[in-house]
Amino acid sequence: MTDYTGQMVNGYQLLEIIGQGGQGAVYKAYDSEKDRIVAVKTILDEALRDPQAIKRFQMEATIAFFLRHPYAVTLYDYWRNQDGAWMVMRWFEGGSLRSRTQEKPLNLRQTSHMLDRIASALASAHMIKVVHRDLKPDNILFDGEGNAYLTDFGAAKRFEMGANMTQAGMIVGSPSYFSPEHIQEHEMTPRTDIYAMGIVLFETLTGQHPFGNVSTMEMLVAQLRDPLPDIREKLEDIPGAVNQVIQKATQKDPDERYQDIKELAVDFRRAAGLRRD
Image 1 (cartoon, rainbow, N blue to C red):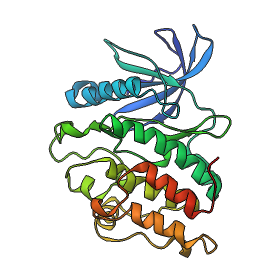
Image 2 (image 1 turned 120 degrees about the vertical axis):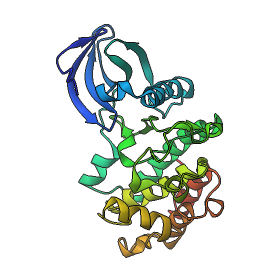
Image 3 (image 1 turned 90 degrees about the vertical axis):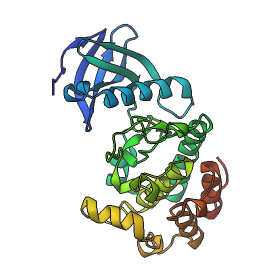
Image 4 (image 1 turned 60 degrees about the horizontal axis):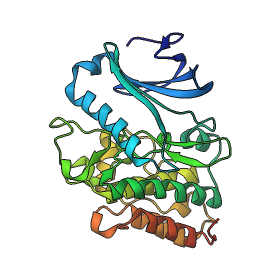
């Protein structure tokens, strides 16, 4: 891929690559006009030849623009030119949930605080018929005060779009957080995000994925077949009601999960014995 580090692109000086996925890269950048640090995401060279990849990138920008939720990433700018497509977004100095839990798992209060905000952002996306499809610790970012924000709608789609946003046999997202219907390419709804949130909650509290460090194929089989282990196997002092909430969120049958992401957040806070902040 072309590395734009050090270059000035449309008024943004690209300082360093801070993330790279299958089809895009994210730079820390300096906005010379606004005198601020921002994040700039660009589609990779090879993806520019893929109409589906470009369509998903444009969809991500469109969703970010219309969502406008206080706990969803803010889109500052978007453009396309001969070099590719670009998005400019708010910079989060607090890092990701992934980096935080690698240092130390969050406690119940911190986890509930994060969940309240991410659930609110997801609920707004679900109201406009958007399912995120790639909810994971990497896509939850924090500001300097410890508030959580939802980012990266690169795998998102509208409910009514069906399967035509991806090529046949191509599954977009992260297998470690796939619901059974995602793996089987069935209809995905808000309950798909709720399943992933259940996995994220387990990992946030324990610092470990419920199915461990296994191969992609083993992970897919586990997501299809195996219930999550009781979180009390990792955390003896955690209330049993918290385990029940996580188990309900990650039921293999979507009809047996929470039907609304805010309901999950309310039940988690109640199970943890916490009052609303």
